[in-house]
Length: 266
Image (cartoon, rainbow, N blue to C red):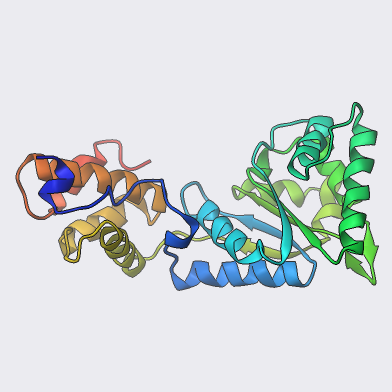
């Protein structure tokens, strides 16, 4: 008997393999999704920050699901590239042929953005791990935002990263770019009630219609992870396996504590 069979689960409830439609978000994160969509509708720029594991990617995927029918979305996840390679990546994401020099790549991207405007299509560039962007790339990004039509930017930029992204953008050298960012959003960890709701949702998706974590276990899980969804997934998965191996029908606080380990969740 596997641990999933032991608990009557049809699938691993805390797997990373989730369709966009299966995501669960608490009201605070749904509000951020709404704000991202509003920014795209207004052709405005966004900075989205949060600590590791707090749900930035989940928020981004939820926003992508809502926006993809009305906007041309371009997602770039490799932010460690230099200026030329960064624009080459944008070219590939936009379906353009990469050029040899940084200048030719930039003009190819900016030209395509203007073509999309003539087709009444608004492009949205989603740049993940933006706190890792090279300074020369940051120096150049605000130039892309200079292209306007009827006083509105021809593209929307969503910079996503750790909290130090805001510190970098606030530097004097990046003031021109920072001043163009209208929305400065922060993803916060889950609160205790959210953690309980999240556990229920993921278990229900896996075919379980009953509580598997005791109240004390759920409280311990929240305390150990500080509400970081990525850590909740990892520890909840380990605790379920351990409880099944011990023949328990419920996950108790001591099982969660053992799954956390002496070093804590992080």
